[in-house]
Image 1 (cartoon, one colour):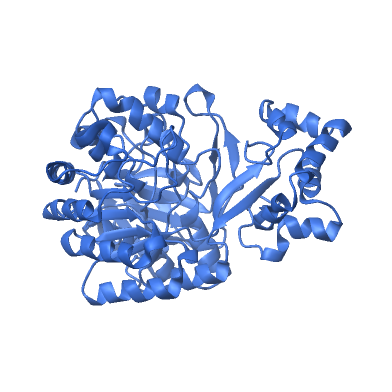
Image 2: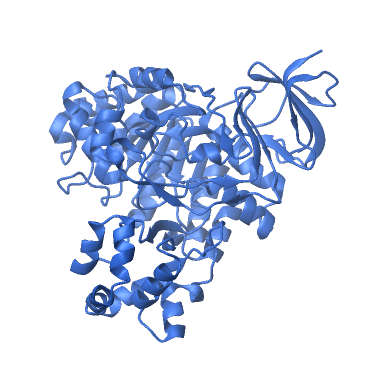
Length: 549
């Protein structure tokens, strides 16, 4: 008997949490048909001797809603073993949308997620009004990996209330309409509803985005309608009102199919664990997602993410070659240093969270706090801006610095990701594209938290990035390597697996810049039975599907 694909002789990590075992995996069409000793040959044979074979990884937090329009291969996540990506997080989506509202939604996405408005308006087909129509449009784009989507509070509220959606409370009738439209969107294929309650997410005019200050009863009404159609609730909470926000999450989980929230270690792992375990003891489906390393920006001479003074702003107007010439000019360099020094100690203190990412192919994400730019400068007897310029000059402008914003304390982060309810993810792929890049989070989990530190056994690391997120999304046919499941599969070399140094490219519409980050150690990625990546390079196959609720 022949098969379409046979992955031969690998160490299978099946996603269930079971220990790895040696087996072949046979694939026919888009389905796994054998796991064990496969006698028949494959039309394509993938030799996996000495390699691991796992389910495809599932990314629960992306903002690829715009990028997929001009990059259906959805890089960078597709370089990192991700075979399913969830769009529509944080309440910001492009559907439902009337033609007259496109400008508003595109402008909102630009200021909240740093995705250029012109790229959004010209890079997407905009041939939908309903959420189901939006999913049809994504399907027509032919993505390389699977896509699922949440419908966002901002779009739903603006569709119902217009300009009043930004700052005014909804009337009882508007709450009913908002909830019914959210439920209808889930009925049309959204896997759930997302909302944002952080005031810092703002529109171009400085106001907080629609839904930020919505009454909690509005969200409870939405959860009831979303739950009728089997959808989940995703919440970016403002945990300054800790107890009230967790009461809301619990209520959402009671009426929807589950609740998903974003988490950082700074929120307090112990008190959060207490609340979540109580909800889970009640039988509620509550899960969190967090960046599995310090989250924040990436800066360097090749970016616009560095110091801010008049002299530094002049650098922003130059290309990289011009910037390098400028920082090597003694007079310009003196101005660059003097103006930063004149800003006082606060700027220098801020560099206690800046870390040089190194000059090797693999970036350094796990340095101790005493290895910061600030401490390097102290050791050298100079100001941090002088150290920044020295390292940048010595590397011909290639140096990048990781700017830690949250999950700063790696010990606290370890405590968080050891809990049963906090899953690694939150890479924000497709967002903040010229400021940060955490799309390689899945590779980081396997390389650092499993191989380098031993915090996770391999089977546990894989379970947390495959079967668990599949369960969150209700994907019963994916997430584990079992006969009858969809053939989303990774073949990787755990000894060689790692992220590569981020780099700036200008491949967005109108030449806008973004970070990309490649990976090393992926022998193959299979999506729906088709090889979409081989030896760390995408094959060009676009075998993904839109996974509707």
